[in-house]
View 1 (tube, one colour):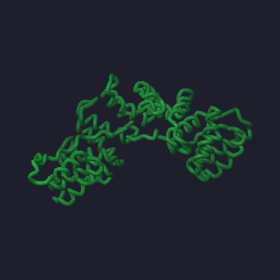
View 2: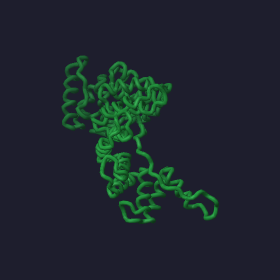
View 3: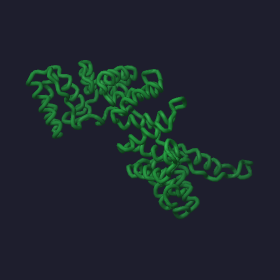
View 4: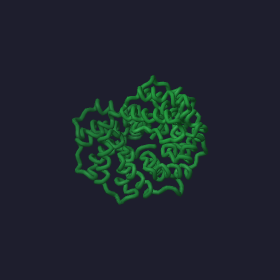
Length: 347
């Protein structure tokens, strides 16, 4: 899965926001912050922005941070990402933990400021260590896992992902499972991977649901259980996961965990293929070429093969190369078109 470090968006802003209790402001400033919180709860962002002005001008870190949020999202004010990040920095320098995370996240994503992974890591570390900020911990795990701004270090990635995962952050639980599943060293553990995919899947994390299904289908971390695999693939598929739709189509085609049903296989391959999943596009082409679960149509088959090849499917590329080989060239005979194996979601 491509990550932008779950960064600057509405992920932690503006819902039940967010003004921590404080005793360091004058009574008037505290009243303004309280009223701003009430306005935010009612989604009256224009009023919230107006109420925060005086407190921000007086140096309130909370007010500066929330003003930044409103500017970032264009809530009650004209969107201005550059100014938002400036306010995050001011609040971060005053020690506000949420602002430290927000500023670090902006640096990592290049939102409103030039991307700088090294500085991002510094600010994220402040929020993660001093405040136990779960998203900051997760983001540090990502930086260590991929060597962005810090030395690539799987142990450190596991440490930071674990801290966030143990706070219940689904994305961290998923990423921790991914590290355990794909580690090339002693950290590899199907059992731990399955555990963390399960924790995230229970929170409706779609990629975790797909990967948990994969674990059941392949008997990794659990006893092989195709029926449970189908249940989890179906949950992820209904929430729009192209990978899960492809995998569910494969289960129906093979009759694993469900009665074999070629029409259902075509249905799920098509749903996935329409989202540009190359393995599904190739498989749908096979179904059309063979007339399996759908009326035979070589034109449609070739259309899907070409789309799959354009999107990088190796089977489709090989098939199209074979089709273009001149007769009598001595090339190997056309091979049977094998379906791809089940897919895990990518980090």
